[in-house]
Length: 202
Image (cartoon, rainbow, N blue to C red; front, side, top):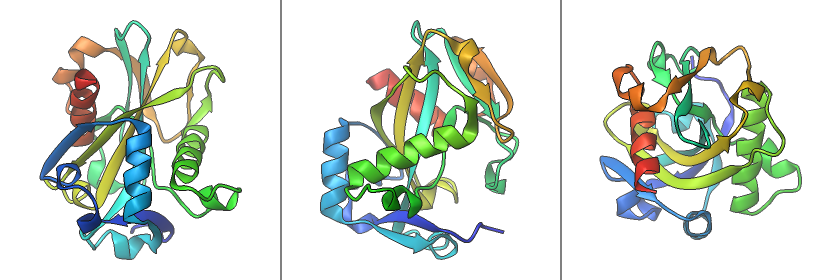
């Protein structure tokens, strides 16, 4: 059963068509993403309702970890609360943005987004280097899967020189650093494939 929480949503029809096509991979500056989302308006909606309403897009920070030489990418096996993604390999760490991300003194869309992104990293990783910062790559979206149809991915990437300094939490099953050139051999969730396409364009 879907966790009953309030999640950050934007109405699909207020977003650019290029963002919500059947398959969207859009390289974008963080400032442009934030400006459009603030203009479109956002709200926190009961997740159980949002999951059944494709007219809403739930905004999900989706953070990809790679080494600075791009040779290795962190992957893990999906076994979290989203049962529709189980047993697929994922590159993306992240999850829903909740009212707590606004209540800590962050009121603008940019602050809420970045607060939610940092909270997700803190929840999913038991250790990570403080100096490794996330940069925004752009957005991904798709209507091919049930999960994708109600979510909008805000893709961030962390490039690190110390992959061994990352410690996975219990939800990141089989967490490992894989050769980037071999990722296409894995049975990956669609968002991971789209995020690789996005990063390649960037």
